[in-house]
Amino acid sequence: MVSLPERIILFMLVAAGPFLLIVVPIGAFLAMSFFRMENQQIVHDLSLANYAAFFSSWTYVKTLLLTLWLCAEVTLIGLLIGYPIAYFIWRRSGRIRTILLLLFVLPLFMSYIVKIFTMRSILGLNGFLNQILVAVGILSEPSQVFLYNQNAILFTMAVIFLPFVILPIYLSLERIPRSLVQASADLGADIGTTFWHVILPLSAPGTIAGALFAFVLALGDFITPQMVGGANGFTFGRVIWSQFGLAYNWPFGAALGTVLLAVALLAIVLGGLAAQRQKV
Image (cartoon, rainbow, N blue to C red; front, side, top):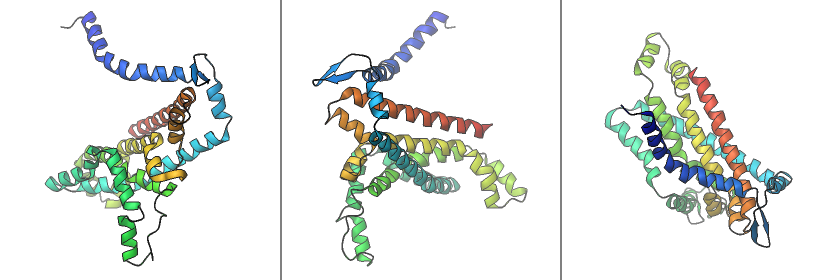
C-alpha cells in the first residue's frame, strides 16, 4: 500500500509538468500585464494603466464586442450544421458509422494553415466557389465578395471548427442508451417527440461542450482573420497580435490577453453550469 508521503511525491511529479508548462507561463503573462513600456523598454512597475487604457478606449471595447458577436455566430452555425451531422452519423450502424465519423473528424489531424489556405482557394477570385457560380449563371464574372471581409472570416471559422462541434455531440449521443429510445417508441411517441424529450436533453452536455469548443477557439483565433479577412478582418485576437508584434507593447498586449482569458473562462464556467443543470 502506498504511504501518504509517497502519494504526495507522486502527485508532485505528475503536477510538475502542467505547473511548469501552463501555470508558470500564465502567471508570468499576468504579471507582465501590470508593467509598462517606456522608451521601447519594459518597466517593471506595477500599475493598472494597461487595463485603464483598454476600458477607457471605445475602439478596443467595440472590437472585443464585435469579436464576441462573431464567435457567437460561429458557434450558432456550428451547432445548426454540426448537430444534424452528428445525429445522422449516430443513427447509422456498423462500418458506415465508423467511416462517416472518420470522414468528419479527419480534418482535426490536418494542419491549421493548410485548412485556411484551402478555404482561401475556395473563396478566392479564381476559387472553386466563384467558378461554380459563374458556370451556373448566378454570377457573370468572378467576385471578390467572398474573401477579405467579415463574412469570409465567419464562413472559414465555421468550417474549420465544425469537427470540434460534431465530435462531442456524437460522443454525447453515443452514451444515450438505445433502450430509452425504444421505450419512448413503445409508449407511442413519434420520432419528433422522442428527439425533443429524450435525445436532445440527454445530448445537451455534448452540445454545450461543442459550443464551447467553437466559441473559445474562435475567440482566440488571429490567423484566420489575418489570412482571409484582410484589412476588414480586425478582430480582438489580431489586436493582441499587433501589440506583441508591430507595436512592441508587450505589457498592453498581455493585459488584452488577460481580458480575453477572463472572457474565455467566463464562457467555460457558464457552459459548465448549464451542463450541470441539464444533468440534474
